[in-house]
Image (cartoon, rainbow, N blue to C red):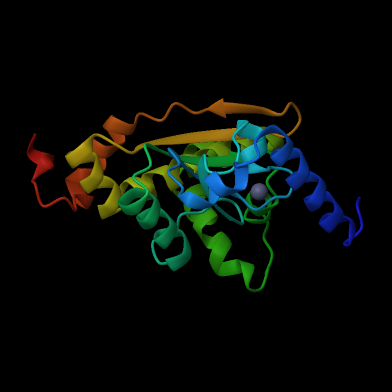
Length: 217
Ligand SMILES: [Zn+2]
């Protein structure tokens, strides 16, 4: 583990390496950002967003929190989604969970976790929604992995419920919402292949915020 001061040495070395390959690198970067992706992932230090996607600065707009939750009343995540969709006009929104997620595991415990209680309540709600399926899985580890996947799926649905996403999709055909899980043991990203069109159509029976009456189509 590098010491605190080492970070500034790392930073200088990084700047030098970037300028060595492109002397205008930072000038160009400072001009504007036009990323195609919004990534919403867990704050877990073992899941570095840009690195696992092989994307550099300027290529992905990132929001991270404990257990990659998209809570309707969380101004931070809602502002990130709104800004990414309306101002940056991202083409894809990704929710990326990961196996061995401490937040998801904590939500499976019968324990008072203080301030984390209301946050992790969202994951307990996911469990309640999918209780029959989850309780049928005997192996605790597999049940935990499945909850990680279902949590990603539910957060994708929460994104599709937003007016910004629905209106942009009707007007422009994007963004598309994707659910991924990152496997810490292998370093691989797994696409849960969420049926974006199908989910959108289904939830608009109740959550249609476009003002266009899509639900009747
Ligand atoms: Zn996590």
